[in-house]
Amino acid sequence: MSLTAYDARRSTSGLVVDKARTALRLAASLAMNMVRAYRARRTLSMLASQEDYMLRDIGVSRSDLYAALSTPATEDPSMVLARLADERQKAERSRRRAVARNRRTMG
Image (cartoon, rainbow, N blue to C red; front, top):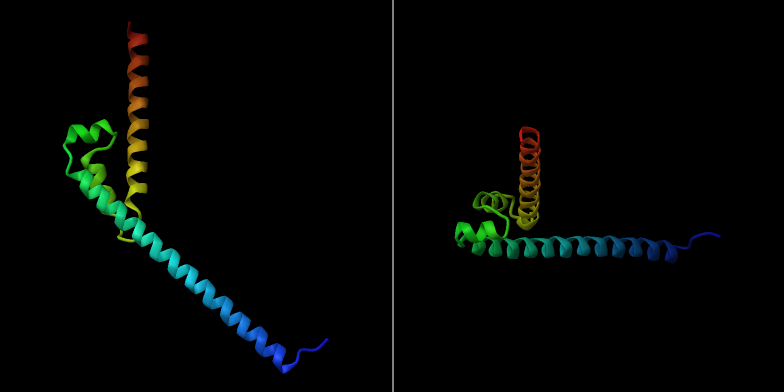
């Protein structure tokens, strides 16, 4: 089975259309990620205006907020904030366990 000139043109144009679709999907994905990051930055900026005791109540610190907001503009800072808050909680649990162990061995 041989390709005719028409078949070759059709397969080439199909390839171009596929590449264009891929480029459009990539551009749309990038745009959505940037919008999501912008909204998260705006939310974290509003959160930064809260009092320190309110931030502690939700498990974050002001330095966590500033660290999250210092990420590149294309990166979602809420993911950074979640990771920092999780690390803080794990460290606090570990510290409490160590204190409890020391009390048991001392007392």
